[in-house]
Image 1 (cartoon, helix red, strand yellow):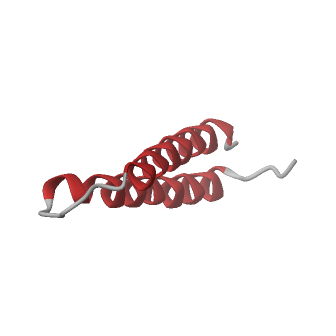
Image 2 (tube, rainbow, N blue to C red; image 1 turned 90 degrees about the vertical axis):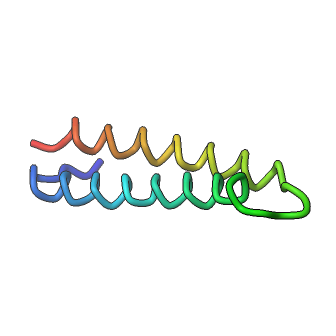
Length: 65
């Protein structure tokens, strides 16, 4: 497994946290916009991807030396 130094781990954690925000925003945007029909699959997958990115971000922050 790769070992990142503290700076690299921090950058990678920031990148994955930005991905988390992106997935949450794209999943929840239809709830606040006027749309004819919600796509529950897209909302569910966006939330799941956001949670996965959040967990990855926190693990990168914990793993940097």
